[in-house]
Amino acid sequence: MRVVVGQGSCGIATGAKKTSDAFKNAIEEKKLNVILDKTGCIGTCYLEPIVDVYGDDGKLQTRYVKCTTDKVGEIVEQHLIGGTPVEKYAIAAADEEFLDKQKRIVLRNCGQINPERLEDYLGIGGYDAAKKVITTMTPDEVIEEIKISGLRGRGGAGFPTWFKWNAIKNNQGDHKYMVCNADEGDPGAFMDRSVLEGDPHSVLEGMIIGGYAAGADEGIIYCRAEYPLAIARLEIAMAQAREQGYLGKNLFGTSFSFDIRIKAGAGAFVCGEETALIASLEGERGMPRLKPPFPAQKGYWKRPTNINNVETYANVAWIINNGGQAFADRGADKSKGSKVFALAGKIRKGGLAEIPMGMTLRDVIYGIGGGIKNDKDFKAVQMGGPSGGCIPKSLIDTPITYEDIVKTGAIVGSGGMIVMDEGTCMVDMARFFLDFTKKESCGKCNYCRIGTMRMLEILERITNGEGRDGDIELLEELCNKIKDGAMCGLGQTAPNPVLTTLKYFRHEYEDHIYNHRCTAKSCKALISYSINDNCKGCTLCARNCPVEAITGAVKQKHTIDTSKCVKCGKCYDNCHFGAVEIQ
Image (cartoon, rainbow, N blue to C red; front, side, top):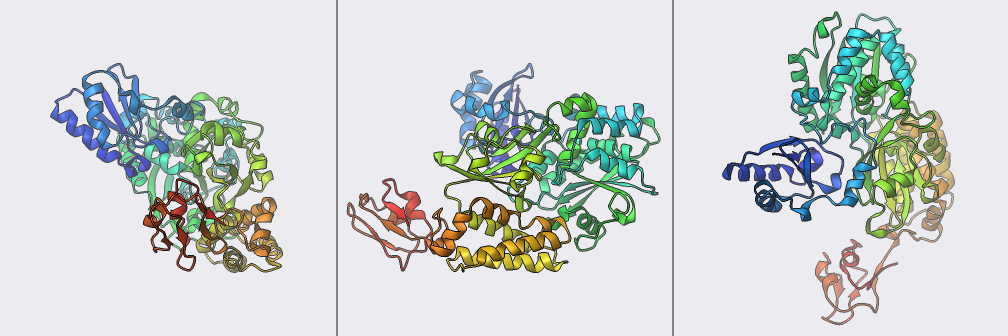
């Protein structure tokens, strides 16, 4: 029997290590013939900590969810010793659908193998694709297979992967580099982190194959330092791969040599732009450079350089093993294969979902994600992070393809999907993303450095109830000028959240400015709290008020002193009788 505890960052944050220690102590104390193991995140982050129990035949018997330490004793006694699963702690059928409705390629091994043990990866065919490529295929044949697959970069713009590999192959250089962009910076995005933590060898193998196709001899993984677990598991995987001859000199007995190293980045969002990333690799401040020349011509140390993100490389070995056509068959039109999305925000089932391109937003949000928390109305979904835009409820049946999402004003981006309900103020959402891009601007060009600041000032004024006639028109003018004048992708896409919210939720801007009212009842400067006749005098609101702004006797109607109220909303959240109103 084997007990496997999910120990990705999400699991550890909810106590998975403590759960694992509790199982370890119980197994040792009772001298059970049970193997305790670990794995990465399987994607159902909302159910962490997750514990899988496998039988002696290697088959999964039971998946326990929200398995905190207080449940361990009962599982050990009833299941590990008694042989009967504890059904009340097991995953529900509705939650199993979260995984069943997905089509996994990138996440195929996450939550299935121990990411720190090379034998697990080899046991499922790991490095077979690299061996096949290096020993039996030419670089042109590899690139052709990637071309057939239709794989596009999964980091943002969706540029054809084969084209980038072919470009670096055709450029001369004494050294060429394959770079993995693991500097995942979008708020609410955690796809790359989970892959690096749960299946690091798949990324290494993808880089080896890409290096062979492009004629590169060195790979570099640029990973943000805020991902310590990902970096630690990458280092373990790289050491194991070198020891077994999958990295280093003369791979598989051929003349091809390729090794990989890690560069920890400081977490600058602008370093997601490839020329800024290259500048950071060279020890300079991460600031974009003019193109051309493109990195495939003159990149890292002015040598031919290819940059793809984690998810792109994680697809490669599967494509080689199964054929490019098998990957293309899973997609739609020009958007082939599957794509990983991080579901966050006001959604019931937050986590990672890998879906075939072409599914609709409705399929993902309601079919996989379970809909909106607390049965509230769906309002919009932000896709593409700060570089993307907000897609409204009226467009929920939009297919998830690069082309269809761009038509809405958003982008697929790296795969962040932040779901919003009726209580989300779209003006404040635009302000949040502008605050982010303003802080992350490298400051190299005036349009981005100053333009985003001016836009943020206007949005802050509007959400503070100080909006002025003409602010909407000024925002639109600034958006268009920044898109046209900014030097790199960060500045050029920074206006997208504002443009899409103006396009689909203009009435909310107008309400803020002309009626001094926040439609979503979210902006503190434009709302007030009061207590109606439903009040039963239970005193819960008064006891939870941090500034003692609520008074009233037990079983008597309470009142709120608006001069003291800080609008924290705790009275509203704690009232069970609908007595607290937001106006």
